[in-house]
Length: 332
Image (cartoon, rainbow, N blue to C red):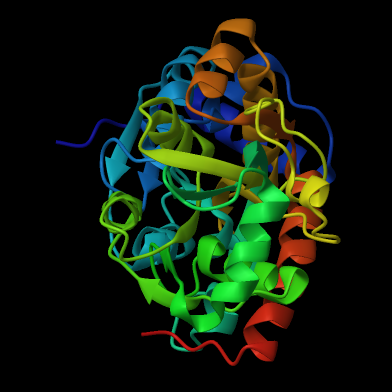
């Protein structure tokens, strides 16, 4: 049986509506009528448990839950390079669903594949750029060349007899390698794999001679003596892997490429809620203990709010779209 609405509750709702329409501040007792979040907040992740985006989501979930006063639940919806989850976020209308996404989901998804059901720049609203990292150009431990410049010289001589591996067509690693080929004058052939673990296996078996890998994955193999780190794709040395030279030190000019993790929300989420989330998240990732966890995962904290993420999305979309067009890259 439905309970009758009390006079006080009716008064709260009416006051909230009038205040919102007039654009004036509401008294505390009226704000309770429109408190948010009013139930658990879901973070959708388009990759399996244990992946970099999953680890990042779980790192921020607990402190975000404490700040919001509601449970924050991480749900994995893997598939299509994260685009299945991104589409589900774009379609969400419950005001309690957000997504933790990577570059591709928020930039070139629609450009690479016009059949992608959502448009990153139209159907999602940026919330916060959490963390960034360069990619590491890695090669088998026994690869020729004593220095990065020597290795690239060997790659030029090898031409299309060498291969490079990626976790799939249209990934940042794929587009980055095509950019590197242009900048460094090399011509290895693309071999797409199901994921980075398979790329590493391919390098260990010498089926592929190089790959751009996330720092955490690459350096674990380098420290184990199985791979060699040639250089990073940041403009200078990266605080994530300060021991690895930048590719610019090897004579590759104009290559600056980063992977990143960010939080986005559906356009249906009221702007005030998105702004609150952005404010909380930028503070959370800058907390010393959270920053340390993120660094240990191979990432450098960015902690920019919506405007910073929006600018990054636009810039990266333009840069990667150019690579897609020039190299006539098409989805599988």
